[in-house]
Length: 308
Image (tube, rainbow, N blue to C red; front, side, top):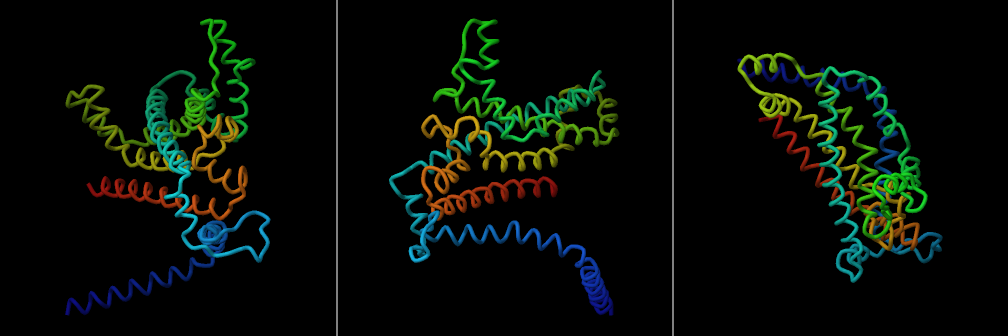
């Protein structure tokens, strides 16, 4: 008897859910259509183009389906530039993301205290976020100029030396510097909002139990803030992996190919040095797969933390 009632209740709940879905569908449908047009259609087009020999301005009779030939040339050919671009992209993602998270958490902790001019500090942090990355990179390019840049001007005045910031030895650290400057405020404000939303009761209990500052940080603050930290880490990792605008403006991938990150490599393959759009699409698919793997790993880690 109870099983019959349970089944009947489940059917009523299912029909009610379907009814609610139909009610809300007219409101959700426009956003779904936009998402399909902006995400699904370009994604399908890129995947299909990756199996062709398509080049810019190619005649229609030369357009052919070549299967996995683009992937074979990229992964097993003699030109290993793809592996170099992936290597420096992953390395930059790890280093920049870790530094952004550490500096951002430190700054967020300072803002979370009762300090003067906190509102002014938050307003200053909004400036790099509000600036277009290409414009910010152009300003940094002027500041890093070896002869007329303001940074070398102060280095000469104060320490009597200068640095060629965008040469083969310093171009990667320069790109890292600009990325940290531009995106650390985002991490800072995100973690600061998380700190402000934490409940006070665990801190009061920790003080009563005699916990010191380090113990409060390790056993109270970080465990409660961990979901937000992981989510911010996920967003920053994906954003760093597909980075394009900063190295494009600062170095255009040079000197040589030293700063040719994967996003810039896709551009130069399809629209820059060569016009091999099919091959560039194959690189894009490889990047999508890599981003998907990293995202799934981070999401599984977040899910395990929530269950734990």
